[in-house]
Length: 183
Image (cartoon, rainbow, N blue to C red; front, side, top):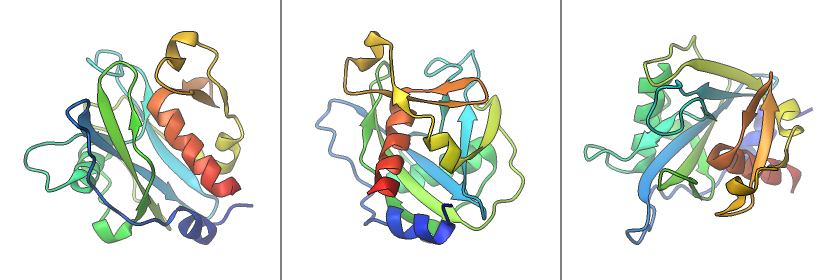
């Protein structure tokens, strides 16, 4: 069984909250929050009316704003705004490789926080639902994405939770976590 301390050691990396986009993509970041004795990951479902990523399951996060000092600040700010969870910089243990979105032109830098527990969460208007997903069983649902149009930019995967499919950039982030845990 997966333990939080094991996750911390496997997912700890140097933090460099800067992306070299070379003008190709818009900068964004997300925060992967894992918590609890039986590690659980927090994900959100976007409302169906949103301009980008409508109805998709994703991690809290968003685009870099001019007031943000770096992409880590973006991820922390967006997490607080979207789900009411305050994570401090010193609670972020590492980052994963950036991933690009299929349709919206973002390059997303994922940061990881592993904490013992989290308070009750509350969704803002950018979030339809908040999911608390048991990480170990969730990662076991990984499959190759069968939709050929999804595989245009790079190899794609899917993960399933309670009849919802996670795909795209969020699934590529989850694949990186699975790879770290299986190495």
